[in-house]
Image (cartoon, rainbow, N blue to C red; front, side, top):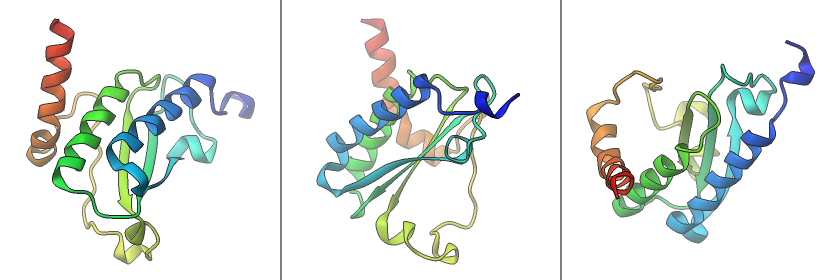
Length: 138
């Protein structure tokens, strides 16, 4: 594949804008920014093969209701994802700006298409998934 084919596609750009639009509704004025990371940011995105990695930064810690709302909004937006999946992470600014040793986690896991999320993630996303399921039935 030539380098010309490994660029930000219009579909990926539109999807990134969609994710960026839903976050202020939940994070409000604490939202610092939303960024492509991973293959999209590094110029290695391959349509049909790559996932889309998006990182957002908030100036403050989120409340539990905000976390649930962000998870719901991201799950809803991910239905329009033009890639094989979306990996989304929201960091506090103080964590995002810290040295790697202060990244706030020791183990990180990404679920792919057929993987089952860990129980804590499943519990956080279950209400959002249930609402999407209910909306699809109406």
